[in-house]
Image 1 (cartoon, rainbow, N blue to C red):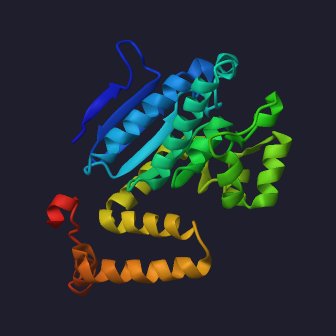
Image 2 (cartoon, rainbow, N blue to C red):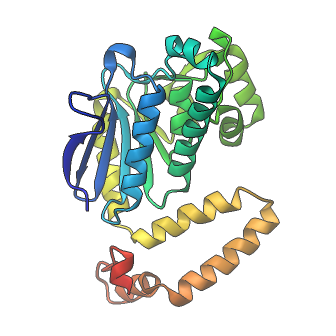
Length: 277
């Protein structure tokens, strides 16, 4: 079990803040003077945190946020010059960033992106891997790679069309423009957009709702959706049928939910695999 607050790097390194309390982990990108860039070291530290959290069954919800006026403005463009001169290092960076987003997407935990301001390029690619995106109404969200002659390499060209549709994805990627958090909600890029001063409160309300649900039920729902999207509708429906049959007939939480309803009480869901025996 992980408890308490810490930074993820070495002594004096606070580029990523990390706190765990009451089943909730909060990861904060913390280089506000640089708009929280996702450089090689930051991505590596994020991967280490995500891997660490995956082994802790007491953590059920993870919030990713940014310090200052940005969630993240993406990669460190100045640092890219050095990366481009070292193809091996650049390949390693791409591998790490894609692996990070894949870990978040495939995790059994619910990941919430709390988007307070600027969220572009790699920042967009990071939130696209999350389950829920809560954005300030005035946040600025976009891909923006083409503005600097770059291409998305951490998933934007693949996940964005799947989230908002090919035409809207092409519009955002080709133009390099940003949209507001409110506009992102309207096209399905953000789960919800709220006034900036309500951002933390809204995130907390969502967390409380998720914590009241069955942990194994939430993991199953996330797995069903993600796996189903990998194939055809027909294949997804067959997968859903088989998965739900196994879940309903073997998972104690499925029975507990029905018994609690019949007895007019709150369900007493099990919190971990160990508790399920």
